[in-house]
Length: 116
Image 1 (cartoon, one colour):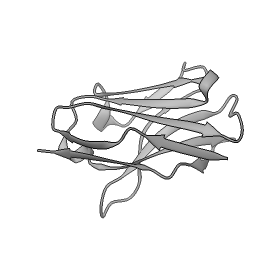
Image 2 (spheres, helix red, strand yellow):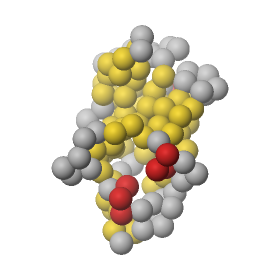
Image 3 (cartoon, one colour):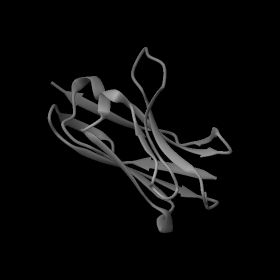
Image 4 (spheres, one colour):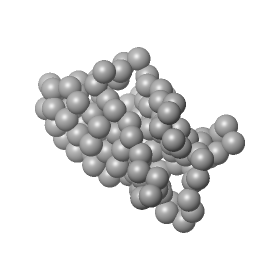
């Protein structure tokens, strides 16, 4: 099983990026997928998650109204549209899959750097 995240990069404050994470090796039918991030010197934190049907979506308070999570089950892919980026959004972003209540599968991460 592999989760491949992409779409990170360097952007100025106020800009946008769209992250993608494609899962391969199995289909995570019925599973919640999500994004986490880890800034230098800080612990990994939850960013957003989305249920299989997209009927249940959660965001960290710090990204509400700026980030949008979505998924394409046919492509086994989850997305994170990030708008109005701030320097404090700078981190390595990881995608993950929750199976049976645990975030079991993790991608390698993609770097997002927001300059002021």
